[in-house]
Image (cartoon, rainbow, N blue to C red):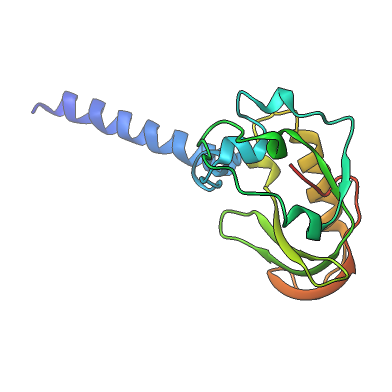
Amino acid sequence: MNSRRVRRTARVIVLALAVLVALGLLGIAGYVWACGTERWLVKTGADVDAAQVDLSNPYPTSVSEMNTFPRPGTIPRNNRADWVELTMFQLTATLTIYKRETDEDYHLVLQDDDGSQMIVEIPAPNCVDPSSPFADYIANARAEFDATPFEAQFCAAVSRPAHRRDLRSL
């Protein structure tokens, strides 16, 4: 290989690495590489059915009631499974445990007065497609959660009311 071709190849490699570094510094790499995977489009409202979710009429419910909903027979990877995934729920519960996951999501354990529990998730806003109808709700829930003083930033047991209009199970 002649020296001119080697220099050209080296320049292309350096340019490609520079682009990757720039993407990482701008936070775009997090959107591509560090976000969740399991039914991610559905969880963040980037699926084709997301527009069918009625965001103007939250259904007030409890963890206990939600735990009685039957599991759908089929759970599609990139579509909503049934009426539950087309409904916005508003919960009143106590936040008992939270954990920041390696993909930057927050996993929250919510508990009813009768002890029923469920896990909900607040995705990292940079992992949510900006065109998602849920993007603003997720960003607001995340900002509210981040602004709340907790005992630890990574994982903690707490006992705080979690009734928030923006902390909804979608």
